[in-house]
Image (cartoon, rainbow, N blue to C red; front, side, top):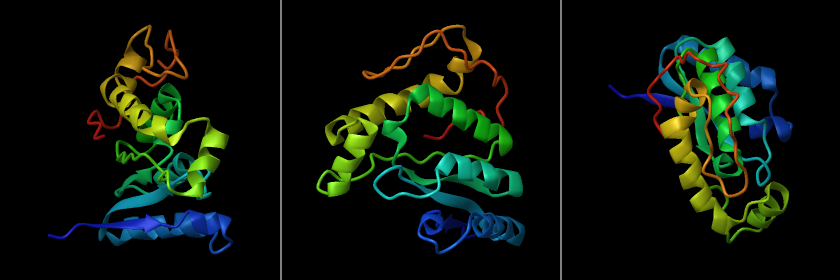
Amino acid sequence: MARFGLTLSNRGVNLGLTTSDEILDMAERADAAGVFEHVWVGDQIMAKPRMESITLMAGIAARTRHVKIGPACMASFPSRHPVLLAYQWASLDILSNGRTIMGACMGVPESQNLARIEQFNMGISNRERGPALKRASRFFASCGLRKAWTTKAGSTPSKRRSCSPSRCRAHRRFGSLAIPV
Protein backbone atom coordinates (compact mmCIF):
# COMPACT_ATOMS: atom_id res chain seq x y z
CA MET A 1 0.00 0.00 0.00
CA ALA A 2 1.32 3.44 -0.90
CA ARG A 3 2.00 5.90 1.91
CA PHE A 4 1.45 9.61 1.40
CA GLY A 5 2.65 12.72 3.18
CA LEU A 6 1.56 16.32 2.81
CA THR A 7 3.97 19.26 2.95
CA LEU A 8 2.32 22.44 4.17
CA SER A 9 3.64 25.78 2.90
CA ASN A 10 4.50 27.67 6.05
CA ARG A 11 6.38 30.19 3.88
CA GLY A 12 3.01 31.10 2.40
CA VAL A 13 2.02 32.97 5.56
CA ASN A 14 5.06 35.27 5.35
CA LEU A 15 4.43 35.79 1.64
CA GLY A 16 0.74 36.62 2.19
CA LEU A 17 -0.43 33.60 0.17
CA THR A 18 -2.19 31.83 3.03
CA THR A 19 -2.99 32.23 6.72
CA SER A 20 -1.96 30.21 9.74
CA ASP A 21 -5.61 29.17 10.19
CA GLU A 22 -5.69 27.83 6.62
CA ILE A 23 -2.52 25.81 7.23
CA LEU A 24 -3.94 24.32 10.44
CA ASP A 25 -7.26 23.59 8.70
CA MET A 26 -5.40 21.81 5.89
CA ALA A 27 -3.51 19.67 8.42
CA GLU A 28 -6.78 18.83 10.14
CA ARG A 29 -8.42 17.85 6.83
CA ALA A 30 -5.41 15.70 5.90
CA ASP A 31 -5.65 13.93 9.25
CA ALA A 32 -9.40 13.33 8.87
CA ALA A 33 -9.07 12.06 5.29
CA GLY A 34 -7.17 8.99 6.43
CA VAL A 35 -5.05 9.07 3.26
CA PHE A 36 -2.02 10.90 4.60
CA GLU A 37 0.41 9.28 7.01
CA HIS A 38 2.62 12.35 7.55
CA VAL A 39 2.30 16.14 7.61
CA TRP A 40 5.50 18.10 6.99
CA VAL A 41 6.45 21.76 7.39
CA GLY A 42 9.48 23.68 6.18
CA ASP A 43 12.22 24.95 8.45
CA GLN A 44 14.67 27.75 7.76
CA ILE A 45 15.18 30.63 10.13
CA MET A 46 16.92 33.32 8.10
CA ALA A 47 17.54 32.27 4.50
CA LYS A 48 13.95 31.50 3.59
CA PRO A 49 11.78 33.07 6.30
CA ARG A 50 8.60 31.26 7.26
CA MET A 51 6.54 30.45 10.33
CA GLU A 52 8.82 28.83 12.92
CA SER A 53 8.54 25.07 12.46
CA ILE A 54 8.33 23.79 16.05
CA THR A 55 5.66 26.33 16.96
CA LEU A 56 3.63 25.43 13.87
CA MET A 57 4.02 21.69 14.50
CA ALA A 58 2.68 22.23 18.04
CA GLY A 59 -0.42 23.83 16.51
CA ILE A 60 -0.76 20.92 14.09
CA ALA A 61 -0.36 18.44 16.96
CA ALA A 62 -3.22 20.12 18.81
CA ARG A 63 -5.53 19.92 15.79
CA THR A 64 -4.73 16.37 14.58
CA ARG A 65 -4.87 12.88 16.06
CA HIS A 66 -3.36 10.40 13.59
CA VAL A 67 -0.79 11.85 11.17
CA LYS A 68 2.87 11.93 12.09
CA ILE A 69 4.35 15.44 12.22
CA GLY A 70 7.81 16.64 11.26
CA PRO A 71 9.97 19.17 9.45
CA ALA A 72 10.54 18.33 5.79
CA CYS A 73 14.16 19.16 6.57
CA MET A 74 15.13 21.00 9.75
CA ALA A 75 17.75 23.28 8.18
CA SER A 76 18.08 25.23 11.43
CA PHE A 77 19.11 22.08 13.35
CA PRO A 78 22.87 22.92 13.43
CA SER A 79 22.11 26.52 14.50
CA ARG A 80 19.92 25.62 17.46
CA HIS A 81 21.21 24.89 20.95
CA PRO A 82 21.01 21.09 21.34
CA VAL A 83 19.53 21.13 24.86
CA LEU A 84 16.86 23.71 24.01
CA LEU A 85 15.98 21.87 20.81
CA ALA A 86 15.75 18.55 22.66
CA TYR A 87 13.52 20.18 25.29
CA GLN A 88 11.26 21.70 22.63
CA TRP A 89 11.13 18.42 20.72
CA ALA A 90 10.26 16.43 23.85
CA SER A 91 7.41 18.87 24.53
CA LEU A 92 6.21 18.55 20.94
CA ASP A 93 6.40 14.77 21.17
CA ILE A 94 4.26 14.84 24.32
CA LEU A 95 1.71 17.21 22.72
CA SER A 96 1.45 14.93 19.69
CA ASN A 97 1.29 11.69 21.70
CA GLY A 98 4.46 10.38 20.08
CA ARG A 99 3.72 11.34 16.48
CA THR A 100 6.89 13.34 15.77
CA ILE A 101 9.47 12.55 13.11
CA MET A 102 12.76 14.46 12.98
CA GLY A 103 14.41 15.16 9.65
CA ALA A 104 17.56 17.26 9.96
CA CYS A 105 19.91 18.72 7.35
CA MET A 106 22.79 21.19 7.09
CA GLY A 107 20.79 24.02 5.58
CA VAL A 108 21.74 26.57 2.94
CA PRO A 109 24.51 25.68 0.44
CA GLU A 110 27.63 27.83 0.88
CA SER A 111 27.44 28.92 -2.75
CA GLN A 112 24.30 30.93 -2.05
CA ASN A 113 24.44 34.46 -0.66
CA LEU A 114 21.81 33.32 1.84
CA ALA A 115 24.51 31.32 3.65
CA ARG A 116 26.30 34.56 4.54
CA ILE A 117 23.04 36.06 5.83
CA GLU A 118 22.51 33.02 8.07
CA GLN A 119 26.10 33.16 9.28
CA PHE A 120 25.77 36.83 10.19
CA ASN A 121 22.44 36.39 11.98
CA MET A 122 22.86 32.93 13.54
CA GLY A 123 26.60 33.00 14.29
CA ILE A 124 27.51 29.73 12.60
CA SER A 125 29.50 29.48 9.37
CA ASN A 126 28.81 26.94 6.66
CA ARG A 127 32.11 25.27 7.52
CA GLU A 128 30.82 24.75 11.08
CA ARG A 129 27.36 23.50 10.08
CA GLY A 130 28.38 19.92 9.23
CA PRO A 131 30.29 19.28 12.45
CA ALA A 132 27.58 21.10 14.46
CA LEU A 133 24.88 18.94 12.83
CA LYS A 134 26.84 15.81 13.67
CA ARG A 135 27.45 16.82 17.31
CA ALA A 136 23.89 18.01 17.87
CA SER A 137 22.29 14.97 16.24
CA ARG A 138 24.43 12.64 18.38
CA PHE A 139 23.39 14.53 21.51
CA PHE A 140 19.78 14.72 20.40
CA ALA A 141 19.55 11.01 19.60
CA SER A 142 21.68 9.44 22.29
CA CYS A 143 21.15 11.57 25.37
CA GLY A 144 19.12 14.65 24.57
CA LEU A 145 15.69 13.11 24.80
CA ARG A 146 16.51 10.40 27.27
CA LYS A 147 19.49 11.24 29.44
CA ALA A 148 18.90 14.99 29.79
CA TRP A 149 15.52 14.41 31.41
CA THR A 150 16.54 11.48 33.60
CA THR A 151 19.92 12.51 35.01
CA LYS A 152 20.94 15.33 37.29
CA ALA A 153 23.77 16.54 35.09
CA GLY A 154 24.30 16.60 31.38
CA SER A 155 26.42 18.47 28.94
CA THR A 156 26.18 19.24 25.28
CA PRO A 157 29.03 18.52 22.90
CA SER A 158 29.00 22.06 21.57
CA LYS A 159 31.98 24.30 20.90
CA ARG A 160 29.82 27.40 21.18
CA ARG A 161 27.68 26.60 24.21
CA SER A 162 27.41 24.14 27.03
CA CYS A 163 24.79 23.06 29.52
CA SER A 164 25.30 21.52 32.91
CA PRO A 165 23.65 20.55 35.11
CA SER A 166 20.50 19.82 33.16
CA ARG A 167 17.33 21.44 34.42
CA CYS A 168 15.26 19.83 31.70
CA ARG A 169 13.89 17.09 33.93
CA ALA A 170 10.31 18.36 33.72
CA HIS A 171 9.63 16.04 30.79
CA ARG A 172 9.81 12.58 32.30
CA ARG A 173 7.46 10.80 29.94
CA PHE A 174 7.55 10.60 26.18
CA GLY A 175 4.88 9.79 23.68
CA SER A 176 7.48 7.88 21.69
CA LEU A 177 10.70 6.40 23.02
CA ALA A 178 11.88 5.64 19.49
CA ILE A 179 13.84 8.65 18.28
CA PRO A 180 14.49 8.32 14.54
CA VAL A 181 17.21 10.84 13.68
